[in-house]
Image 1 (cartoon, rainbow, N blue to C red):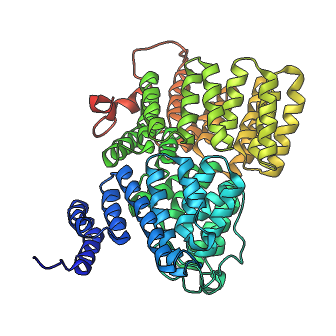
Image 2: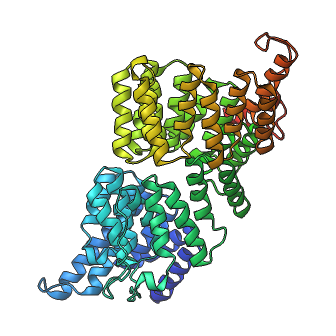
Image 3: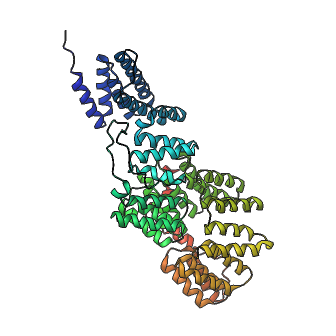
Length: 558
């Protein structure tokens, strides 16, 4: 008879294989071990090997067998009586978490929640709490989600991935949440040693949390201050996480030059990162930088074709070329990859609205708004309602934006824009714009809308004064361009030329400023600028001069 195999040594070797992610080797060794011993340890490790290979259904079955085998063995050892030990409870918690991971991978959301809820709270650990929090959040169980994310931070104050969803849910973590109990243990069985007070141990943690809270309350000026404090207190210059969110905050405040600078720094720090790169693409499009947008889209698709951010960038570039149908197809690719990607639904709404499909655009913006109550979704909904002459719905939506985002100047401005669509609402609109500017003098939405009202009444002096005042707060190319446009209307051509050139000095690729100069030159030479000619427009020249591979010319992306 052959000697019994040294299973303990082989179990240790199997753990090494799993640590090195040699899944197939671990599976083969596991099958050998299970033929000689069907202990719960072998079942668990075999399940780990299968999970690593992506065979989630099989892994799930073996984890369940391991749980059942462990319970039978425990009952036999205790004679069917007595409470289980802490070690036994911890081991079962670990197995249940692994089973829940399989449920998540198989999109069995209800089963995953039930499995995690079956783990006693003291044995869940940060990882299980975060997983459960995400499941609760995605199924609309807000209070449960908040409790789970808070529990994750209580278990480990450096579980930073819990901070942002808490902010999204409107629950900023308390300062005193940094101490965790020494009895807590994570699902892998490692003892969670008692930690010092988080604020004292890591003073940058408080502004880090506050920055996320401010971002999701749309208090972007405060967010920028807090990100600065994180960098200064923590000594974390040019950290990728902060730079990306700083750029987003700067974009929301229409500080487009600084936003681009922050995105550029983030790209230098990690040019393979795709987080927030869809917002970077939006910025390039807003600034008329078609070449840069083309290169960014190409880079993102080359880096990871399975991320929605890449296809949003491609869609935006297609839109700059007037290829709306293609752009919409790329947006659908993004949504197929992430069915809750807010920016993708917003872009779908924008494209559909541009195609004259306002009713479909309303649906898209409504979906975006369901996932995130942000200003862009409200703006899109209002625009779509107005295009279908649904004045009441537009006004209700704008007022809802103000209720959701109190003291937000841009939201108040949105109410003004709806009121301005009817002659009897003009005075109320002006008051709304004035209120918005009193809250935030740099609110370009309000300033530009008020300028348009003055221009409509040929009140050019008031428009010029307002724009000059706005430029004291924000030195942006589009404000220079708008001022130049008003000077043209007032036949102050030399002033107009100066401000067009000022815009181009800030953004050489500004299509609006270049187009303005073309029109102005024709006017100054006595030529009707509205007559068609055979020359390329500035837009066409920008698109035709794009450097590098054009992502839209490759059928591989279609």
